[in-house]
Image (cartoon, rainbow, N blue to C red):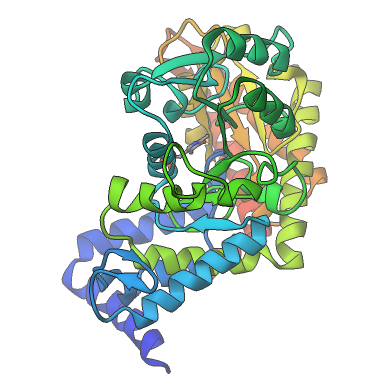
Length: 444
Ligand SMILES: *Cc1c(COP(=O)(O)O)cnc(C)c1O
């Protein structure tokens, strides 16, 4: 056995012997993931080799700066690891610049915003309820407090209307436009956004946290040739560790904002020293591992299945009378307006959890319920597709969803009764599905 394998084996034994309470919780969480149908659009399941990197001794390395220019000694190995992660990220996305140090997607966005803009500058981003992310200008985020945030929504058909975005851009003259979303089921026209950014002379940041895997696999247009900067989280559709990534394409070598540095140079300093201190080098190794997988035919097939599964799931749900936002999907996620049938998102989320189906409640356009109640449910197929479920298997998932909803007797916004017989029947079917389609690498 290699030293590394022996280390992980002994580490697990030590944990179980010395801290059985915590060990049991970790075991329980693994069982939960194996035996439930995860349909949370923002989640995925990292291959064990990714988690092995994330829990490796690289986590012990404290340093600052970048490969070849660290502020501490002893960095030969981590320099090679970080260079590998950067090269793999650039190759996967066809980018000329990549920064693998952001601790999360939000950190990546904040680093970009705070380096390209000045306090008070105007940012034009997608409204939270239309599908945008907190960091795109919400008053609940530091972004809404330090910048002047203007939001664009969606048209009556639920789609982003670029004419509306262009009008807002002309009226408010933003210093940055942000495109990309957290709960938007349609294709984002990055080239169209760039035309608007060029017309008003501002930066374009594309945040592809949710669709990064589809982008890599060619299942969704890539923003990298169009946006000045592209950001993503690494734990959603890239099946990597928790963390963020910043990319830049053809604009990487153009001048940054009012300095003699290039855009790439500005982004490099944006993460360190501006926004972060030490990188998490174990996470960087885990990113390198996840990025290697992106180059394989297996990943392309997975991403394609993710998209086709979502399309099939949307059709099956709609056939069973569910109200889908925009009437379907182009990507991995399906948004359901449960308020249309008198339910709240929180009630449906909890009822489904009792049945072994994990989803998340989500506010929708014009939602009159709070973020803890909501009128929407967001579904995604990242983990269903990873389990090997095909479009033909989405009928049973849609059926289980509808059976669970049909068994709910909602008493008020947050309280409900769930028919226990139906619940137990669904639970049995879910268990069967989880055994037929085991999570790769977790199936023993
Ligand atoms: C998930 C997400 C992020 C980043 O989230 P973190 O939790 O900070 O990693 C950023 N933007 C969008 C659009 C997202 O969906």
